[in-house]
Image 1 (spheres, rainbow, N blue to C red):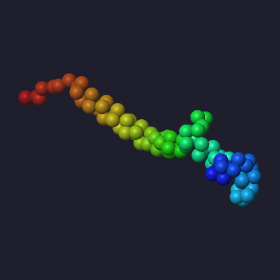
Image 2: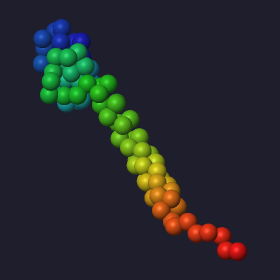
Image 3: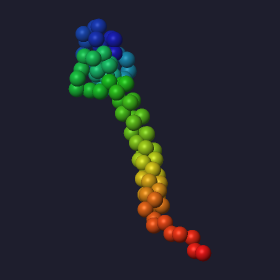
Image 4: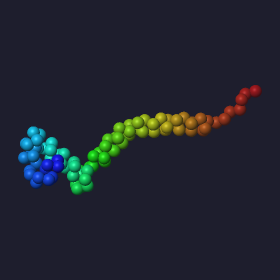
Length: 88
């Protein structure tokens, strides 16, 4: 990536010299630019990692929410039951 930025050579030429595909190198350069705040059209690596973490956590939070809803309904039903006097 540094070679592309400092040499001014086209990405395809640098990629050929490095023995990698030019699109792989181009993507790395773009990501480095986004991480440096030089590109607004791409998420930073940190932001992408945060989104991945939140997406993994979301199903767990949904399950917890369903459990809490069920417990709330159950509690509300117990409270709403008419109280009967014990028979004598």
